[in-house]
Amino acid sequence: MAINAPKGWVTDVHPVEQPENTYRYALNAVREVDAGDKSLVINERGTVPCVALPSEPIGQVYVSDNSFVVFLSGNEIGLVKECSYTSILKDDCLNFNATYPVDAVFRVRGCDTIVYYTDGFNPPRVINLSDPKCELLIPQDVPIRADVTVATGGSLNQGSYQLAIRYMDSDQNPSNWTFFAGPLVIYSGTTYDKANGEYSQATRPAEDIPSSNKSIRVSVLSDDKPFYQIGIGISTSSSGSVDSVLLSRPTPVNASTVIDGNFSTWTQGLLEDIFVDRITVAKAKHIEQIENRLVLANIVETERKYCVS
Image (cartoon, rainbow, N blue to C red; front, side, top):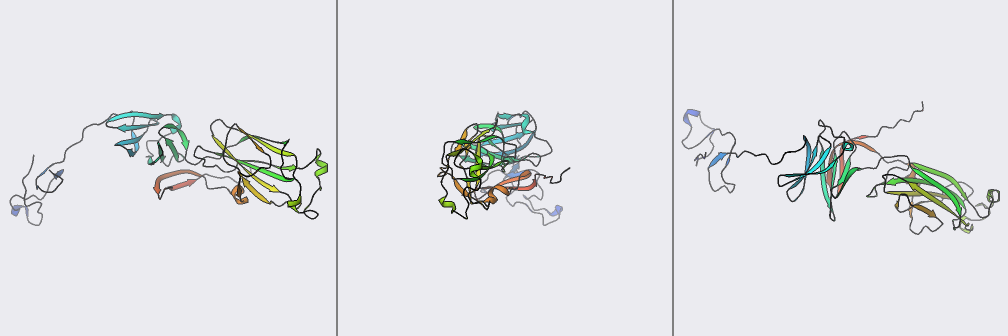
């Protein structure tokens, strides 16, 4: 029902003196047209059911083309487009809780739509709509299964080598370093005794120490981690101090790496890169994108127990 009220809304007078063709109260009233060229008001139009969802929605994010990614309490993520629902991922690994609403943002990478989401109940996570699976936004520190051996054949400089290994996710975001091996003594010859005191910085500078005929072989296994990275601390002096720290490029798991002395593809690092752990976020209530960076708010850090029972 339309009300012709050319003089609009007036509340300055007593109700008994209300001017003709004005109104002082309207419930659910909106303009009949958005352009403002008419003063007619009508009751706000109601809504009609668009789509029936399998369970209670606890979060949503608009992605593109009038499409919304919805998060459901029944451990399900789906897509709503033009009043049609399509399930993307349904798995108990989502571990949703109806009392913890999901906050989410998205971005497009090439042909993939990536959704980052968090709920303050689980660790922050990410899902690629083209390849949906349960995946953490920040890789957790987990034990690494690795085999490290010294082999003949190579040209590693003689000295002491210490290795560290960490997992990386599909976007090559790293965990903390959780596997350490060494020191591995690399020397020329066939017996360790020959290397004991064979060269020292006092008698020959490090750059004059000849290379060995040795290499280090590293094999890393994983059921669900796509990449790993190796960090090496190298000491070529008798003082035992580390001369250099090198970081390898990400390597697919279940593939061996042979460290033979050619470090042209490795990058220079610092001891702090390996021995100082990064903050590990256990939970976050909110997530946002600012200047192409993800920002987490109301975070809870992973509990660390340093006491020894």
